[in-house]
Image (cartoon, rainbow, N blue to C red):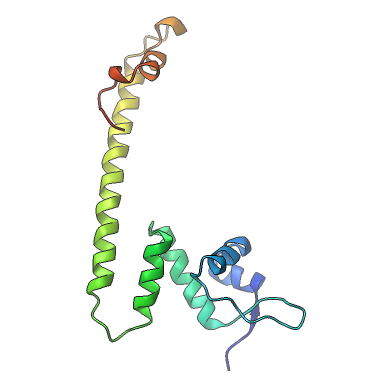
Length: 141
């Protein structure tokens, strides 16, 4: 028989805050739970496992739609995992693009700071670069 738990206990077990659990219900990542006679949400072990899955996927940067697709795939264990692999590969490519932008951003900031003479604001390289994108090393960052 599954253990029935209130939302606070589920939050502690999963590391997901109560408002976030409610949000996941609202957007359909977590099914609406049964309620007690006093209208309090109740959860069971399967909800805890699902929330842990969602939390881990969020920690890895997957967006809610990708998580929704991965949850649907997880519910069909006999299916080939090609779709899950495709979702992960797409996320990896997006992550690599973000890393490239962050590296460019770091280099841009380093250059601004290194070229600053620490004199007066009117001569400040940081202010000059922020005022004129043409002064930047990279077109996009």
